[in-house]
Length: 202
Image (cartoon, rainbow, N blue to C red; front, side, top):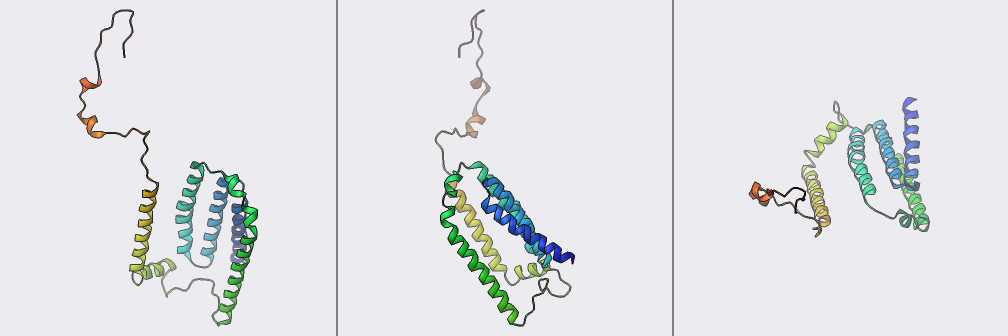
């Protein structure tokens, strides 16, 4: 009974947070609603026994992607009124896409049930092994090269993003460490003895 109540609570909050994330006027509020949706989705993953996916949702998506997106939204000067101007124009396409995805989910669940494989409440794991241990065993044995390849792809994407966004500005004075180390104290200061009543000439 408690699991059923928790499921409906997490599911309703996830759906409401997703709707508010799309319809919120303030982009910062949209990111906060997105973070709430991620937390509730992590709760759903815990209920079905997928602790690893729940941990990824909290650590990767909430701790990195959502926070990074929040900083980007707050730092960039984006005209959000112009971005929202096409919301009504693309609304029928979005509704049709949602209906298509919902139909695919219903069809997949019906095909799964007709196949004679009952839907279990938890992810299948070997005897005496947790979900995270089973995933780690597969990743670092059978799918080790694929996992390393995914890491290299992400590394290349990270380097590419840095190269594309890094540009030199002409109005910025760069620091020259070698010249600062070679500078003598007498080159940086000048002793003067101005007369009484006269200021120092710069």
